[in-house]
Image 1: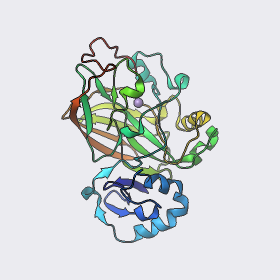
Image 2: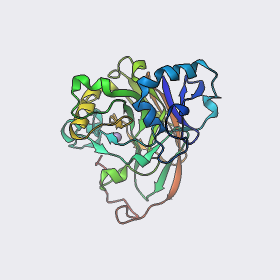
Image 3: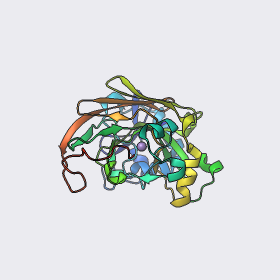
Length: 296
Ligand code: MN
């Protein structure tokens, strides 16, 4: 099935045309803080599945086109990300970094946003802000020291993720953690609906122009290995997200752009890019002209 977040804290299921509300299956209240209804439902999904199927057998509550999509998991324990995980992207960045050598990093979970929200670019003079097209893995069953061969049992599903990034010499976590810098959606497709996640075509377009095109078979650290590697360091929890890395073709986004990411068997998400306010602090100076752009 496909799981959505919508309406400011509700959890739904969609067939891509209609929406069924499954919020009542969570022990939390829609709109409450912290917004953990989706994590709750993901953590008990197998147990809840018969009740979800009963709800889907009934009448939908809305058309998908009529709801405002939130990010499916707004309050995960961790948003992990692998940098430099496609050879062609490693080459274009002229970096010595590789995911199989450098492992993963963290991006602020508060940067998560949904298909219904714009990417808000801070105004940093001369800064390059890039799109990165990525497959997201959503953890279903948590664990520590998960073996590579067991990894798939811990995967709940997949989604489209755009890892928005300010290029520069600042700490990566800061350059990638602005609010709205991690659109995820439009839904999570459960793993049973993705026949082979290691063979998924992915594209990203900006205003209809093809910027990135790849297949997940070209990942340096593969899907199972990413789960195993992450869990060798930290306990994974239901709802945790893993951004799997971007292929070649990263490029500028500017206010007014429309960015579309498509992943076969997963879905398609389009987000608008708008201007936010100016950011000036000691780490983001008013000019970025001297900042190296090769750091990913
Ligand atoms: Mn990335």
